[in-house]
Image (cartoon, rainbow, N blue to C red; front, side, top):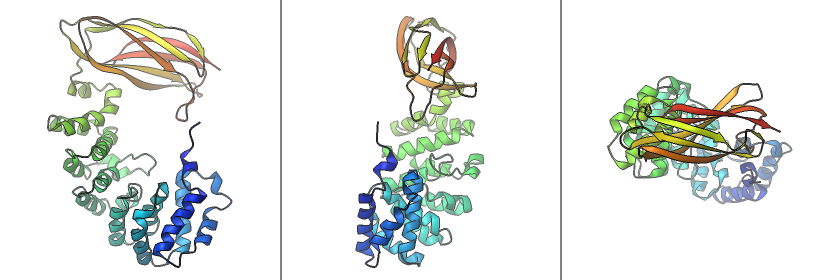
Length: 361
């Protein structure tokens, strides 16, 4: 079994290494007290982010009372604090710097070069969106790709592991100028964030994102890459306008025939193989986005649908045999439940065929 993230970081050796760095830039730093505070009786039960927050709170007890003095120490130490432990530096700003914006924003811009400040900026955005986003807009022109990425990643409306930004779910207009600046960035790291930000926005404002993508399309290879990744949720949902944007038209001349499963009853942990024929009735080759969905039985009795991509390709007229397997092995992100499950074949966003199977313990 893969090692859990929480057990890879905030270990006795990594906390001591962090203490050594801080001692170098603050000779009065009490290493023994800090380590003792960090590894209290509740430490083992905490998850990764809780361990980070707890460590940040412990830092508060052994660093100067003066926020300004502490930031000077942390800024000097920042390039030398390694691993997820470095996230404690922007977290310190989030916890203790909301009343001193000038010092705090400057520190976040520095810290994000070594450990992303994407979580720490969000309370600032929520408190004063216009002021915070003026700062982020400025960072979008920075020479450091880590800083430019922060300009986009920090204002995502639905950033995973982070507090949401309700105001940007309702109105993402303050985000768009930043994404415009970064839409042709030469760093894939930055472009990926732009795509993820647009994908977040599409969940509340699909028309806005499609308008933006249609306007951007063809600007450059970098921008086209962003557009494709930005539309992934809409494509999985079968949005017809998103499909047409990438040349996936109405699949009225495409049929799915002879869908079969190699077994109709299997146990959790096993795999099912399914075979079908894609019949293209058009007179010339056409672009096809081919997917399958599994409608999972849930504990409460309702079904939960998840879409999996098979291929995006050009298919010539005629019949094409497709073979795929799906695993029902439990994962940390998905637990399976006994009951009826359905597998459906999707062509350009349209479900064309389905078969049911029974999952048992």
